[in-house]
Amino acid sequence: MNNPQISIVAPLYNERESFPHLIERLNRLMDSSPLSIEVVLVDDGSRDNTPELMQALALSDARYHCVFLSRNHGHQLALTAGLASALGTEAIMVIDGDLQDPPELLNEFYEHYKNGYDVVYAVRKKRKENFIKKTGYFLFYRLLRSISYVDIPLDSGDFSLMSRKVVNILNKMPEESRYIRGMRSWIGFKQIGVEYERDERMAGESKYSFKQLFNLAYNGIFNFSEFPIKFVTRLGFSAILMAVIYFIWVVIKKFYFQEVIEGFASLLFAIILFSGVQLIALGVIGEYVLRVFFQSKNRPLFILRGEIKNKEFV
Ligand code: UDP
Ligand code: MG
Image 1 (cartoon, rainbow, N blue to C red):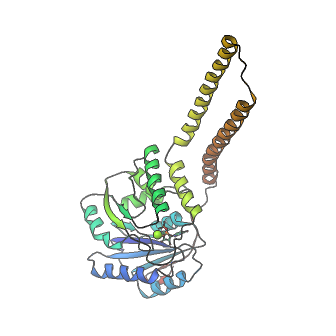
Image 2 (image 1 turned 45 degrees about the horizontal axis):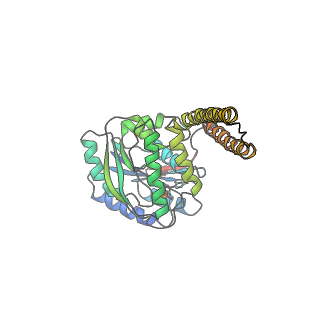
Image 3 (image 1 turned 90 degrees about the vertical axis):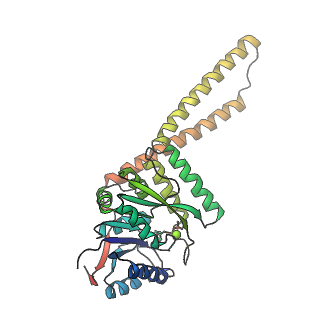
């Protein structure tokens, strides 16, 4: 069988409930599309019966190409595994397995690809999620954009279509703490955003834990910005400046007004303030050291437990 033109990659972690909906939508899309399409489903070490559902499907339908990870590696690494396994010769589309990203946008994305764009990313016009999450996302993307040295577009996630050329480059990038939407921007070439309304999750609960979400945000900030470390330096300089001004004030008070400053409260204040500042500074340095530490191990990014391609285990 010839390799397909397009791969659609979707990572799945305990997606038993949304699985049938996902397959139905993808089948409909593939049946109606003139393009040759494969779907790469990645099982991210699910604990429910998602892998069994995937296996049964891939053994009976050659359009489905399934990859199984050895354990839960997290969304970004599951995506990395999917991109590394995808066979699409022209372009690869990335979607979430819970149908929050409508796969039908493939046609529109593909048009842009045909017009010479290497990356077509989706921009969320509206988000149907709770207020706290929405506000968090809103603030985070604006913060990241203002401090990043890469031009990362606002309100766009991993949902995108990337040319084979861009995916080959992504596959060669060895970084361990992956923030794929940032890496995608960093790569460059012609990129374009397409607005869409992000739907609600089709079924089941969000599989991103609070901790994972925070980690992702951290990766965005620490991997694509020098701001935290520069900020600490600036904080240090401002502290020194404040101390100098305060010292001058004390001297003036003593010699011109013969007043002695009462020391206890201000001393305590200074100690607590600067202990806090120092701990934050250590933490910021620690974030960078941690990243160097993990990267220096040079471990593979993910481990495969199995793969089904063309209705066969490989
Ligand atoms: N996911 C994954 N591994 C994880 C967590 C999530 O592969 O450890 C998948 C999940 O199955 C879904 C996609 O990543 O297809 C997005 O996750 P989710 O919808 O839970 O995140 P949210 O949309 O709530 O941010
Ligand atoms: Mg979701």
